[in-house]
Length: 114
Image 1: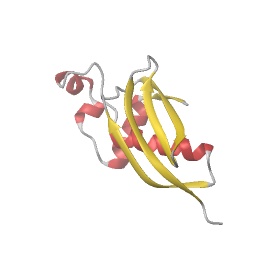
Image 2: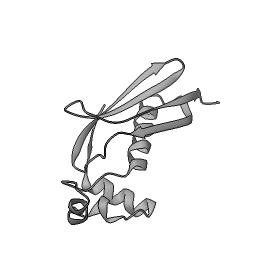
Image 3: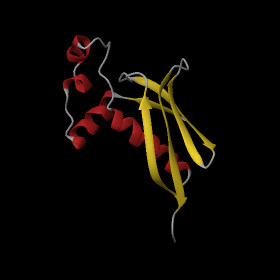
């Protein structure tokens, strides 16, 4: 599932989460830290992965979640979220279009009670 991580989405997340660290919002601050562009919040990426999965599986509920970041995700990048069922867990991989993995993790799900 592809998703374009825009500066606007990161600005909205920063305002909502109150994490307004300059590295996420400011090109100059990101450059000082060694990045070409601002860096997306890790929690935004984790939450987005959950949201995308649940949109496709509305009868399920995520009960546990973990994610490990291998590289920062620069703003204004298209990422691919890949979900795979493995041993009762949902494995999630977040990669940029070149195939380079940015993050990976897993979560467990339960069917929602009716």
